[in-house]
Length: 203
Ligand code: HEM
Image 1 (cartoon, helix red, strand yellow):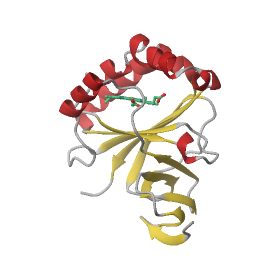
Image 2 (cartoon, rainbow, N blue to C red):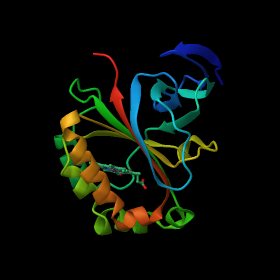
Image 3 (tube, helix red, strand yellow):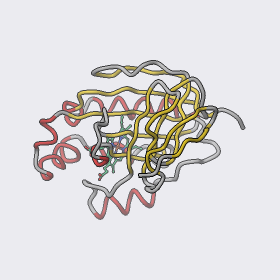
């Protein structure tokens, strides 16, 4: 284990591992590259309100932040080959200059979800809820990255940290997307969700 103290975007943080490049830490606090414009509790226990969010590569264990959430990008669980081809053809990456808005949406699902078989989860996720079909309609305007928390093996408070970037002119479309997904059977398994909207500081 590597312990490393350093300063990022005005925050002093301590990393427990700089080794895994797929891990990201999201720090909510009083400074950072992303300014919080809205923080809505959708369901479950809230997170303390913060003014800024910083994203740090690697697993940060402590820092002068109100909260630190960690997740890791991973292989896909549900997409079919055809869906994957369509996603790859339509989606755009993070960091586009025009995409100055972002959403960080940490999500936890119930134990009922996790005890289902993979087949049953896929049925609810896509055949019943059309998560991918709905999402596909918002590409390439919305860029996304899914971080898994359970795979880290530590006591993370959420199962997923979902991250989205879009231009200010697509903010209403993003609200529509989130509302459609929240009305689906899949969301019946969501026990904790906080919708944090952000804007990028600087030029
Ligand atoms: C641009 C629109 C979107 C697209 C194209 C999209 C696509 C996908 C795909 C393909 C997966 C499955 C990954 C896998 O196979 O493991 C996924 C998972 C997920 N998405 Fe989305 N999504 C979109 C928007 C959203 C939004 C707005 C939310 C939250 C409000 C969200 C929350 C999630 C969650 C929590 C998972 C993990 C589900 C699980 O493994 O149980 N997605 N998404």
